Length: 332
Image (cartoon, rainbow, N blue to C red; front, side, top):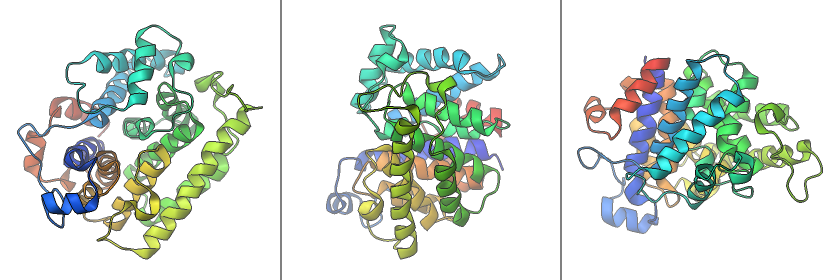
């Protein structure tokens, strides 16, 4: 089914569709694009944003690391640093990138240890919009997948909620690729929150927890899991409502922060579990961080349904198709 390719291309398609609506409210979206919002890729190539660019950076560094086992934080962190700095310096880094990513990557480029370069108080969606490749790598232990998910987030976004939301995003992608039914996903994510609530991956995160007001690593990380549990409550409410026509941000949030991006991206997917194109259309026609919401919805849908989920002609038009193909093919 080419699930890894489906997820990588799906996130790029969602990102591209959501890019022109990112800073528009619902009235503006409907006025400009009609009731359904944007439904066709625009341009040839159809451009993406920093969401896809950074997901590719995460994925390519993972490929490099996995060619040089064993896979450890000491191995992969410098590779992520290099890819993130390459992104920072790229002339194509002109897609309204997030301030947190820019600030942290400048610190990485200056040679600071990542625990000093990261923006400690930020839980922006940049933490988890790019984590899908960590979920797509087969045969990682749960501890390794969790640690790697959190580390790639922590290098720019140091807030515990960014770490927890990134781990949940990666595990959702993995579970869907392994065949989990969409309806079982919210409960599985909730169980993960409870199981991991006081688990601090020191081997991966080092001294990140040592922030003002934090008396222990368990206190630090528990805050992130608690905020994710809160937004999963809102996700349950929105799924139960089953409203497939209204703004998906109304209950689960606009997606500018990591836990809301996860929940609203999941909502779009869960409202249309067998209609992947509708899922990313729904994400793109939203009042919040539309490209990130649709990007995550596309990753979830593609992980479940594979490359056949998407219109065939889109693959030849999306920007960075060669890189998306390379990453997907490695793990299909």
